[in-house]
Image 1: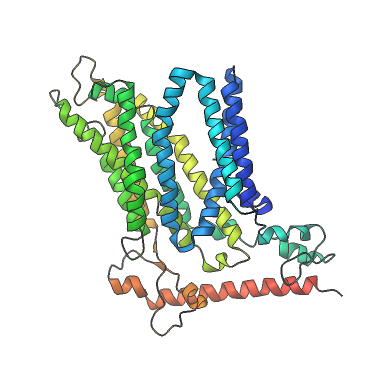
Image 2: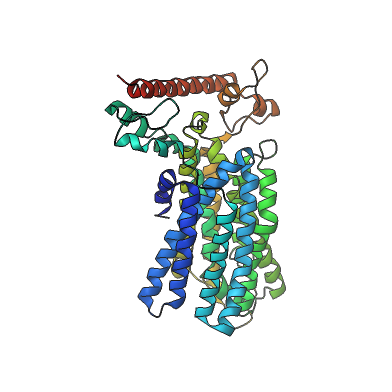
Length: 464
């Protein structure tokens, strides 16, 4: 979480491909160190290195995904999450088998070999590192001046240094209501999986009478639904011509809230002492399925919605790399935040909330605080959905209105924010006249700012 913004900045200096290579290489080295560690301090140090390397891989791959997918970002992100979900499904049982029969060291080294093979594949498949536009301007910080093609032009004045090296894409250009709320929301949705890590196993052992292996199988249900059903379905439904990103994300929070209400094996905390175990099985599997589906519905549309909320001028050729790097680092930080706070919230809620009868429990020790913890977290998820519904505008890329030429400037000028109050098809497609006027005004301001910057660069870099 802390390293993702640093990785985003490094991409502008080293290139995304090189950051990805370095991250994978660092992950191989840190995993090998972890497998060979013989002390707690060395294990912690190796895990910290794994986190640093993983941040570089996550941010760089997301940035490359944004650059390559263009208008099909939801489909590309869904495809990536499908493979990530498959990894979460296959990894634990394979690792468990290797640990059981070969030991901890062999299991860790096997993972290092697998990541090393991935690194070799990436080196062979990915193109050579691409130098971004604002990296080519970095020499101006020291010697000054760029020519009209954006290349270094030798000695120059201080004005060219500031204009070329200055932040063409500023943080305040990227941080708006949609990016901030959506980023926090995707982090909170990923915290749902983490919430169940320290709590679900102990609960289902009481509720369903299963051992730790059976508890892992139940937890896997959510991952399977997320990867196989949720991600492809969310990518299809979040398209502007269907539900749209905002509606899909709000629906995801509702589905997750319903799932957490049913995870205890019964609706909330109302399970009677004689609640049948068969009903608890059905409710638990249904709840885990809702969890996987809801997380997919909230996660997949988030990055496309964040990108669509930014001004079109940020994705001009000279600023697109910086904007995409900031988006990828913000999205990756949000995911890491959710993975970090999820287990903490789960353990805290189970520790402080009151106990109640566990649905389906047939023994004497049937009291647990997990039902209340699940209900409280589900209510928080519903609250996140309500916040998103009220605060986040529904931004969609609409076609040109009648009478406007279908060229790049016209399309960019009507990439406007649509308020959530309008529900008719005509309002969705064309928007209001005021919205179109605001979009045109914002585009003109952006064009004038870019023109001023180019004139300043040319005038300061011209030879005397």
